[in-house]
Length: 122
Image (cartoon, rainbow, N blue to C red; front, side, top):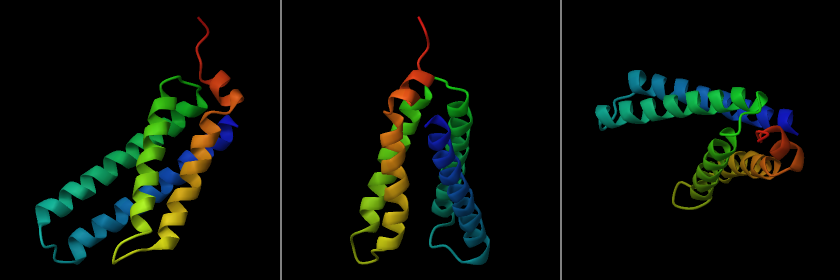
């Protein structure tokens, strides 16, 4: 179960890396309404990519702190997915692509074998 959870995180990190590269290309190829805003979003996405990658690596090492990081990321991802389902520019396919791995990772996070693997013996 721990390997499945880490695999989901690595897939999410790969998707975030692709998104970072896409944002980077947009900064140079399109004229942004606010160059500063575009750069800030690019930096945030890049930092989140690093955060999820590091969390995935340390998940395989069974570190206890990853549970909080994973749960926080999945909640944020579910919030973004909910936004993708609604509004004028709704993209349900993106919403489902974000929602399914987030729910699966959150469920795996509370699996007894994952809890055991990421709990330190006192």
